[in-house]
Image (cartoon, rainbow, N blue to C red; front, side, top):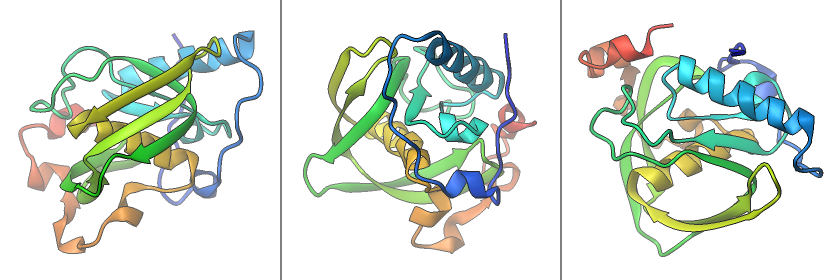
Length: 179
């Protein structure tokens, strides 16, 4: 098990646009996947992007198939490895909801996201992924893929009166976010 250091907001590496993966099913890609999953699980993350651990590649992991302690009321998202993603909104419907981020520890903000999306990309073996999802699943995908394009959730916020410390806003779940 290898738990990597998660970069925090302010690190310029989080603002870069990640490079596409060009070779699949390599030892290096499998090792990166293992490190991403170990790090995500150790931090109780709903997802994690390669740039968050300093790797400049278009690769994200999200979901675990189990309830997430940082989002106890959210539906379960299946464990997914998504490489070179493309997100397409399905309709104009946006939804505001609270988000946190392992790179912005101890904070939450109200973020608008497309409610219904289609995402495509590849798994670690290079097999195509094509899913249409909504709700929390769609939110997690958009959040993680934003990391590949140099965006953190506060950059998406429209109202900073709805931004604050998790232990103040949600004291019942703040223990799941302790570093």
